[in-house]
Length: 307
Image 1 (tube, rainbow, N blue to C red):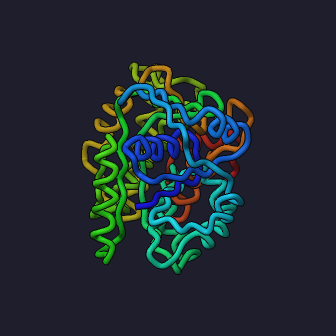
Image 2 (image 1 turned 90 degrees about the horizontal axis):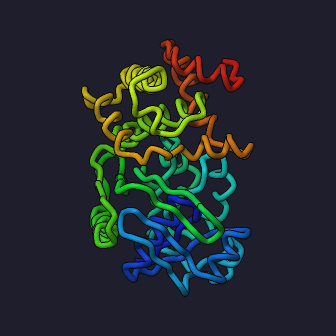
């Protein structure tokens, strides 16, 4: 299968990098100094999971350059930030066809569900990822810890079963843990119930994961945010495991102590961030169902959100 990675940050670079290391056909969409460094020195991934490796030569280019190749990939992984999604829709429309499978791997809940109507000629499914990875220097990615799991699937039955199983096998053969979900709406919300409280708490206190791993007001807020998400899930008839708080704490404790969410990193740099989709959208979803989410209201108010 021919893979296209749209967004070569920590997430996209690791998905494509692990696949390419296992000799799969992968092209990366990148830009700026990051792209220049990749083309000059290759893509370097400092991985706690499988060790450091460098991919050179590597197929990396801008969207404009990819359009000039006239290639049509079999699978497109979207790993841009949520705020950049609308900007790449015209590009996705041009490089996909009726057999192309598009898998958004974003932190924002329901991305694939909202994207599908905008790309009706393709097969947009849904997915999420569990990983700690980021650009540590132009052309270089750091992947922390042993967690690297991709969950993807469709809502309901699909004629894509064979293709999805092939993608899953390619990922597994490339040292990536995979879940081919039969209930992707619940599984992607389950990821949101982890990343949203984690990013929200980290940004509110401006702390790394290690502080949240210890008992105290920081962990208390993380738990309170998780409880808000549980109540939101109930309002939207989304089933979550009864022990989701314990599951989240276990995942949190598995993170390297100095880890921070990408949203927090972006806020620290004064860059555009996913704060709207990870924090403010929870307030809007709760308001639509007339339920209270006090922990999110506290955090949202801290960042100037007015409901």
